[in-house]
Amino acid sequence: MTLDEVRRGLRAARYITTPRVETALFLALALEKPLLAEGPAGAGKTELGKVLAQLLDTDLVRLQCYEGLDEARALFEWNYQKQLLRIQADRGGWDETSTHIFSRDFLLERPLLRAIVAPRRVVLLIDEVDKADPEFEAFLLEVLSDFQVSVPELGTIAARHRPAVVLTSNRTRELSEALVRRCLHLYVDFPGAEKEAEIVALKVPELDERLRLQVARFVGALRKLELKKAPSIAETLDWARGLCALGVRELDPATVRQTLSLVVKHEEDLRKAESRVAALLAGR
Image (tube, rainbow, N blue to C red; front, side, top):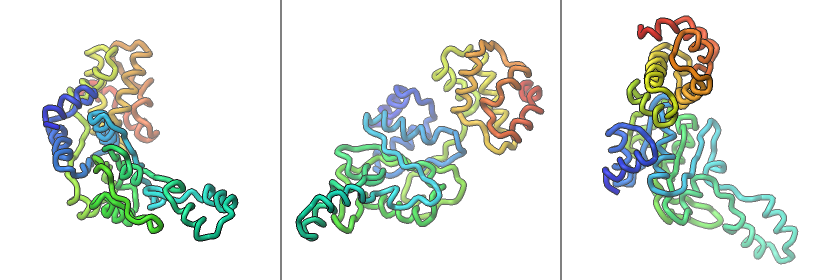
């Protein structure tokens, strides 16, 4: 796949981005290396994996990371209930029974193994890897190195087709140097007002052109405040759809205060933003 094909594919998927993101995606595919997308929450990093799957016309396998995530939830575990039923139903000796119950038929594939054994190339999205424990990160590094896993009862299972991998991080903690070195790095920030207005135009075309630019500029100004959580692009789109539903044609302080909870989700942030509405609308 060429760089131009990546650009056209992103446009076809209605994903507005920058040449830097296009180049990073192309190189990740060309070099067959994982792409690590870091940046603030809500800037569109997860969407990269979804769009890449659409671009390649393949399945998306998603692993959502969280504190305490272990190999059993990420890689595989045995279907103990099914094994127990087989043991109860099998009248043969243990040697014969154990051969059956520790076969692929009794294996529950979790996202990492599912991506490795997929019959065709898939996109593996490892979302918010910074939320997982450092110990899991070390295990993940081993899997991404060779794209094969060892199941003691079955031996080594190697990838049929090397998946395209996208990892995302909100930078809540520093990732290990080993993992960062293994990946191509991409920083995904919030778009500027004009670019975000383009996104709104694409996703909420019924919104008036002047109003969509007002919305994008106001949200951009909100992100410059010291909020607990900056508004995401998805919340910008929710706000735009809400304004359409209300028949709003122009932003004014009363309308903004009435609908601000669509884009600002924490009470402390809401109070801070409400006190600055007039100034933010005026561009100050």
